[in-house]
Image 1 (cartoon, rainbow, N blue to C red):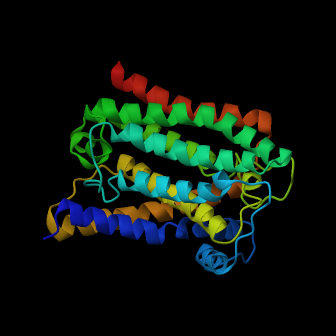
Image 2 (image 1 turned 180 degrees about the horizontal axis):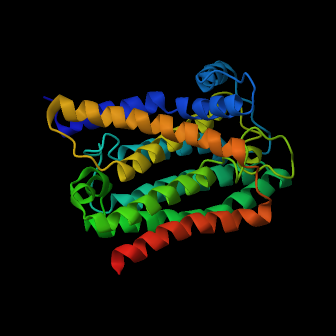
Length: 311
């Protein structure tokens, strides 16, 4: 019979391996809805393997900051993933206040990416870094409010208690609207956090509209693979959080509970990936002045949920 640690390790391993399937599902869904053949859902795996075999080219003006950034981004994202109860039970790493550490680890990865973009000395990448920081200043408060709502319901600041404990599963029906609002808010914010439409377009080549992609223009080879993988892993982590908020079903003990948690996790990957593909099919990329309004609207949903819990 697996204990919580064994189940958490299995869930983390599945997330690390399966996260790149989410962008593939999004691209495949978008292709189907727009009448195109599209790339296979495992395309990112092939891209990562190809980039891993290539060499790395560094500009003569970059310093150790640029070389260290991909490692910092990947490590910060992996540690953040280990703080989340991916199987809906317990996280691999858990302590009081780990929800705050989770948010700041993601912020650390963003900070490293911005520093790397500025380190190139390119005004073009500096423009993308400025946009990224501007959007992040609106995204982060929304994420904090969403986590605060879960913390008020669970009466704890640990993600393992918020998402893996019995608080959400035994909460009264009065908190259901708040949980739905938090899930919707996190889905809206993850599109901005992971540079997806309508905030950004990972496939764009228009210089004046690029945000995240412009910051990694000088990144190549294994460094670029780490950046792309970390972004996919972030999608996987938020997928697990969203599905844990929406599906507060009790997890049985033993292998049955572990298998149920893994199945729900994989279902979350599919739902979020397909949901992103649908959004990108029916919505165009917003104009830059409209993006903060969209992000603020996503954060407002979490704020409304918090108000409903506190009233």
